[in-house]
Image: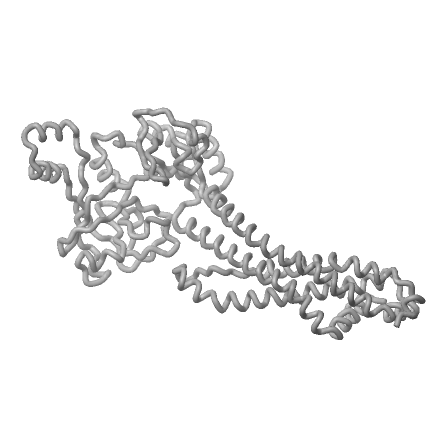
Length: 456
């Protein structure tokens, strides 16, 4: 019997037992449904992470630090760390005080001298006391250095090729609060950024010796403050893919941010020290060149992490979560395997005389076995199609609601269905179904035709 005839006959046999076929295929469909949604969710999460990275980091840059803990590499942190007065004190994520070894100007000079290094960009975040605008109201604000790799949504104005000359990018959330009618009205307008110099202990002691007076201390604090006027170059709306924690940040040029940071850290151990820097590699989009500089920096004792390393780390987390959910889908598939075995075995028992007749008419054992294996494959195909199509339809129907609920922003989806993945999944389910049907197919192939024909 030809393969095409076997396929047609197996399909006809399944149609004769529609309810049994549908119920068995539905068991596989549950697993297919869960696995299809899991793959779609992991695709969406991975695409979202990749978009965050591409919209905030330059692939030709390396993040370089002097302390492994800055990059989350906490090897050995369970042991007590010896105190070093040259290190900086910081609070870790658990709120405990710890020390990190920061980069100095001497370190930056060494890094800049490495062959292949194009630019070293300092990561400074000047601590603002407050910001004020036209209405004179004071607001707490955070400032950071603007990276050319960032892609904010410009609401008004434009972002210069090189941000500097006391110009800044203002988040749209600050526009009305600072007294501007609209986004366009804020362009070119002055804003006052106030920073406070760190107290010199000797000055404080001298003030206290003169007189313990709150007014005197307030005046001293005022004398240690500096007001710097900046001009609004552009008003921006942080994209949903903005780096977490930087949604409403004032962005300054590197030189301007450095000057403010120097003022606030003078007379402190943090003066001209940097937790990390961004090192741009000449031709760094070539992974070989980027890896060569990264290896050189590591050999010098620095910690260097590329954008690809960060992306790989985040995708590993997604992969672990995906694996956990897939495991539950596989449990449903294991249950469906027993359903296929049971269905096919009952089918063999019910069709004993039919099998005997086919053998008496010249159908060979291997063709009988192939017939039942194809029937099992049909069940796997139908179950896979059923589960995947329901998951696809439901996912596409719910995607707009989920996107809005999770505030993922336009152009982003939690569920991204890849046709290739669905096809591969259905093929795998067919293979699993065939494996499950091997035992019943073997029994059918071994039936004695004479004994089978005698069966009532």
